[in-house]
Image (cartoon, rainbow, N blue to C red; front, side, top):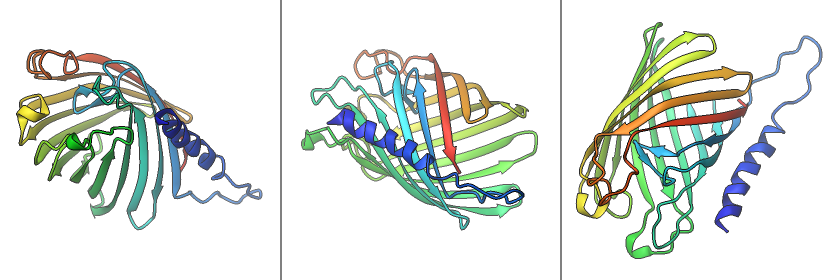
Length: 250
């Protein structure tokens, strides 16, 4: 069942992409579609520095809607591997929000995300949770910076309130190449139940685009020792993560 859920999401992305390119007469320009989709393969699904796939590859897909008013919504899915008793193997994120221009080079975004784990059946330790996120981005021309805050009233596995702060820097190096990095800090109310102390996370890497493809490679790490990482796991250790994605529509 878990495999079918992921496959359905990815096939849905492909089928939507196939319906967003109508034929136009000579000289007539195609209007941008509000629908888009992505399909990606990554060597290790990392969330705020921590591996969600036991340092193994993941297949991921999304379908998104974005209107000219700034409203957007979508669904994203990935296989996961927590090595837990439930053998949880899929994550599905539902999100919606709005982006508004503060100035010609500054944008603010407000978003809500529901993180769901459909095949996790231990409701006494429910993994599902909601986050509220707000961010502001400014384009300086030679570089763009973004600051984001995420708040959850009851974080992953019912570990109490949590806050994450993340800063992003992106620098275009060529029309097809950019460098970027993230630096953040995660606070969790119930560290004992969560499995780690509060921690810092970061990554730095390069992204290259060609046609509809994006190639990304980066170093991802946290400041957690192996002993601090869920009692002695290597999920929080640094590593190189490579990702290939293809986008449709939009």
